[in-house]
Image 1 (spheres, rainbow, N blue to C red):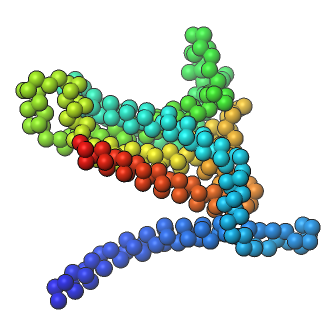
Image 2 (spheres, one colour):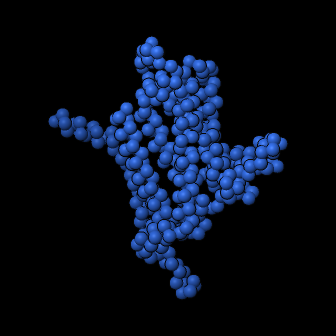
Image 3 (tube, rainbow, N blue to C red):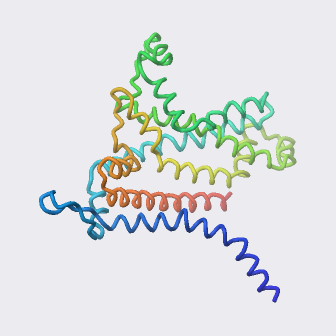
Length: 297
């Protein structure tokens, strides 16, 4: 009787969550998979209208066979290799600095570092497009006055420009996560290490970092997933004068262009599913890797 009451109580409490999860996750994903299996074809030499026909895996083959889609993943690879170490390492370094006895005015620096995250992504990208644009940007003007010439919209400068915007937006957010985890570390452990003669660097990287490995793993996982969803920053940057960022620069932009510029919803759905599968695979790899590192620690 008691077990039945417990089961009913659990069903009542979890019911709203599963209902919302089904509506906002399961149904859209299922619809995207269904949509990716169909395509629209014109009949009568283009004069007979369009009809939706079952195409099986043709949309997936078309996406994988498109050079622009494959190059988008190459761009994502370069972005991840540059962005993820800078993000995780930078946020962790800032959190360790704030947690140390050397830091002063901690609340001010926490607010100053977190404040960019409160700016919407589109607004942040527009701010940086202004700062990247020659004849408008005081930053570019100062660089040119100092003899430093760098085109932020060039093929070589586009990727670092996007990475810089993303770091500006998210570095403070992840720093707060690390700092909160460091505040939960037992101070008696740190005091014991100090008594044993451990220096600040040894305490930071041999004691503090291993003790917050779960937070590091979580931030790394979210950063990987967020990297694969790269869209807003390059979309705004593509509007810059002479920008090397194209409308298919990333897989997300490829799907957006296919859906809303070419009206090929089947291809867009297939590209989205392929990107989602890639994100799931990388999330699994990161989770297994960080889990194994955590068990060893």
